[in-house]
Length: 138
Image 1 (spheres, rainbow, N blue to C red):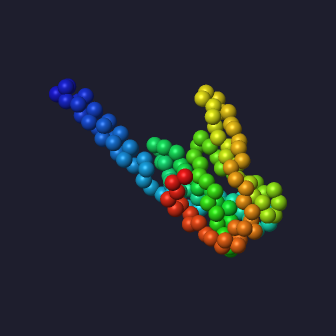
Image 2: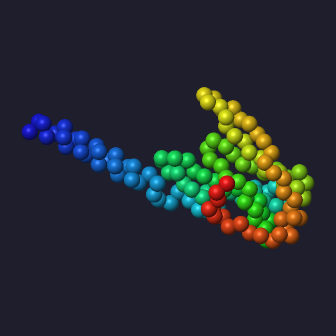
Image 3: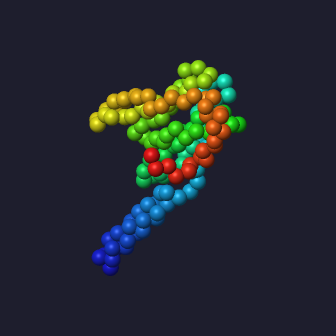
């Protein structure tokens, strides 16, 4: 009888761990949902959408867009916990997109680089709306 107890404890531990792992990626953690909005200049915004929710096993992936909410939404990049995309407005017509990447091995060391500049008037003329969380192979 004493030999069955460790076996039962092992089986119960394994089942508990299996249930925990099976549930890590499930549930409503805000996947494919609007995450945040930041005003860059008059009527121009940076929007972020959580397009992949990692749960307990991996990281979230955030997609970044610039938009005026009426005539364009432009996908500018995606990031996770190791890097960050952010936008800054030089004026009412130019938005710069930067990547801030953590390149440190033991402590955080960041490198920032300008990826692209967008002319807001050109984006308005294109009149194109990128859908949030479309598949992106960039």
